[in-house]
Length: 324
Image (cartoon, rainbow, N blue to C red):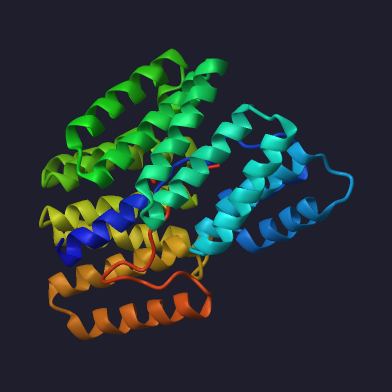
């Protein structure tokens, strides 16, 4: 796999337009989830740690808190800590007999982390279990999300025909849920990843452009999800040999992420790596090397999982902020 395609895959794996529906009510966990959506991860961790340590919480409540805590660690590129939190969440939920949408969402988050670390078989098993729960609950919006994530898994496996069918199923479930507008940005972003993976770069640009517009409508122009969508579009434009368009999109995406999530956020840092890759294509090798070196040093200082080749981190998401 070439350096440019490798980085494109990592960009795709970190994408997710909406945070799954874990405890969005007016609770400390819901407050933490809102903070994560705005890139305030350290504040979210403080709230969640207090929740998991609180002696008066039920097993189900602590399980939900651990679930979101696992998501936050994953967002920070700290996969070992994320795995421990997810394991604790699922054990507590199992103990409580919890088979709610929150339990299924936890399995989905867990599957995303496993996909990031390369354990595709266990990820598929977790997704199947989540699908069973959502089918029993007749939660079509969540089923749309699961089919989208299953498409991502099939892309990662190189099974593109199956990925296309998963996206067809995702759109069908979105229609049944009357939530097409809400689900479209993630579905289109995944369709863009599929197009790029099959070297249909112009189609990838079209799909990512649609995702950007949907994110702008749903979240506005000053939201981390919109910023990340611009970076995905920029990578597709780079692959489609539109370097000027790629620079504009990446500049816009990085500016939004800097203002919303901060320069130490994993999405911003991977976006900087994408931008350094673009600079290489433009012939600015010295500046590209400077940015790449600075990003890798920052990631090491923050305790993120070490990079491999051109890609520093690969997390489930926004296709990958997947979301809370």
